Image (cartoon, rainbow, N blue to C red; front, side):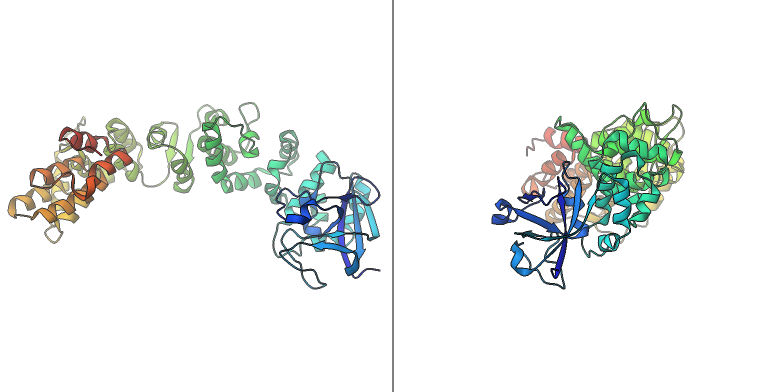
Amino acid sequence: MGKYSGYHLSEHQELCCETPSHKDDLFGEMASQRGILATHAWHVAEFLKPSHRYLHLLAYDDEQIKQVHEEGHHDGASSFSTLEYVLLNDAEVRDSWNLSDPADLQRLAETDFPQQLHSALIGSPGTFIELLAMFLGEQLDVAWLNRFRLRPQQLSDVMDNLPIPLLRNYVESGLLSSAALEVIFNAHLYRAGMDYQSRKRNEPIKSCCYLLFDEQYKPAHPALKQAVACYQLISGGNWRGVLDTRDKLTLSDEQFRYFRESHSLEDVIATLADPAITLQGNMMPYISQALTTGHIRAATTLLKKQSGAGRYFHDFIREFMAVYGALPRVSFDISPFYQKVKQQQQNADALTIRQLCENGYVDALIARLKASDADIKTLNSALQYAADKGYAHIVRLLHEAGAELDTWNNYAIKTASSKGFVPLQQYLLKHGIRG
């Protein structure tokens, strides 16, 4: 009896001599050599081929090892890599299982295989679910997963490798519960951004999170509907088709971050302005972006959608004046709000000119520039900080006070161009500044 043991996948009841074929195989010379492959329980699913039907437990000795993965070692105490296998000349078969036979799978579950499956320090035992799904198909249920000490949530490890009809069957059977799916969709929002990039390159999207639900096959649970619609929104899919007609999509700051990171600023502003979308949290940063990029109407719409909008109206006035040098046009008397904005700036004596510019304090800046003769270095420095915020009117005030628009290697026009600050860019171009 050999002192080592390993598992071998085969197309036949006998041992199969083949070359390593793992999709992440980087094993140099070993990848081209033929032999009997043996691996640990937690790697069995990773070496599975569609043609494999049998699993053999092998015993072998040192002299039977043809070659070992060059990045590690093989002894009786430890593994030698995260993708461990050995290439054998010969081996003794201790036991065999027909993986397409549920009775043999049951017999495998009664061995120490499940214990070995979960003994890896690195790797996910959940990948073994792919093997169970491949051979059990619609018969796979919680009871089968329990036999191998697996959980339904671990289906997320292999969902992209399973057919969509089979996954939908697991949804119908309850193996993939609404609660588990909600967690899976929210945990894979980074994939939605990748799916969106694939769409832009006209590449097919193969992500199961994108394909699992659609207009015809909608999720039933309200929370899951929201999670799926969020994924579809980020990936550029038909998120409206997932929701019922009168439903709105509510996004957290964390969820919207994935959309913001993968889409253009114009898409971000247009999406936030959509009456069917609600963002939980502070929308003022997006309102500011809309103002500095010339989307005044969108900024006004976002302000109206902001919960407790009255609390943010003073900031809206301050930002609007910093960009456009005038009060926003509204259908009510704005003067009480403007007086509050001016009062906030009356206590700004301790702030430097640069800090006044960064905060968008137009009235305080005008008063400071009139009361003191700031040197050119101070004005030029402040102008860069104002340009970095997109405050076109403040840049104008500094310029009229003597600041140079092309200072710091044309920093202002380069910033305006890269960040889409249209009002600032227009002012700079009007005065002959080119990037």
